[in-house]
Figure 1: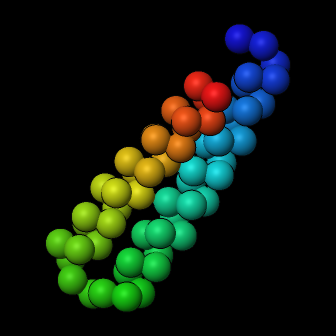
Figure 2: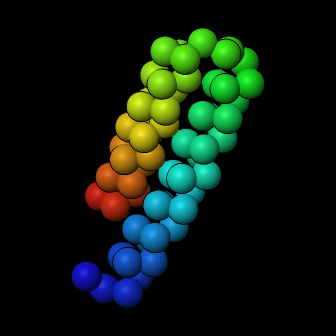
Length: 58
């Protein structure tokens, strides 16, 4: 992998983590229901992984 691809994957990872964290915090503020917060956590992880693959594959 070239340096540019590694940098792009790193950027995707950082943006995915920030986005998923913001989504999780928003879900925790909106509702106090534990099952909904757990669902939001799982969805945030899936969003992050999807974003990484989307940016990595172009």
